[in-house]
Image (cartoon, rainbow, N blue to C red; front, side):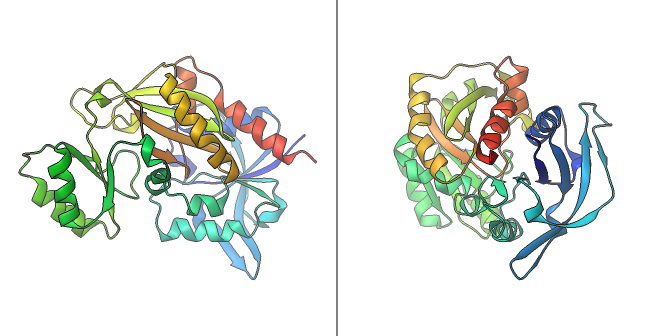
Length: 314
């Protein structure tokens, strides 16, 4: 079965193919004989109920510096595709939300992965609060009095923007840190939305586990260990990928989340777990496929396409 696939993503020339999950998915799709097309979000257009994009035929190769070839752009109605991979990175701003409204017009006739309505309704740091009993103590607010009270209760805390990604602007504040007031002012000036405040988990020095679920089922995991001089374990911030196995607690977390993800059409999801505590549910453009494979784990890209092909069978 050959599928006609479009990928909506950030500029392909900018990606680091060694760690990019979107690229891993594209390589697997090519290996299966599917036809690939590419467009960036700014190429979307809607007239009435019809959604179009200027798409380009895409070929991919696992060769750094020579990883893609694009054909001539053609205005194409998105319902002509069997599958659209929604793979643009956050920030999860109004531009991102607008694309989910447009893609919702073609889904599920054209299968959008992940379901755009539920991507819109499940921001990673808000959706996770539905499972607050699995999380460390967490507060979402921009109110100074609330943050002060939380800090007084828990002492050592982490502050991060609600719609950030890749470990950007994540700060640890100890109980006596005199930078608290200045950091609050900086966040209040920089971010219009609320932000997330969590109890600091010292065990993060041993790793922040990225676990991938495919159609609600556990698929693979990698432990991301932060650099000695950094709080953040994200691999784009210098974290080191290590092979790992799931603990009973982590299997319990996956079992709790799986039905909710499957029900929402969130086919490819990455969750973050530190010391048995769920911290985020990533549904927009989760990473980790290549890192899991590189440390000897399973081929998650193949699992994703197995699930997509199953849903597209006539």
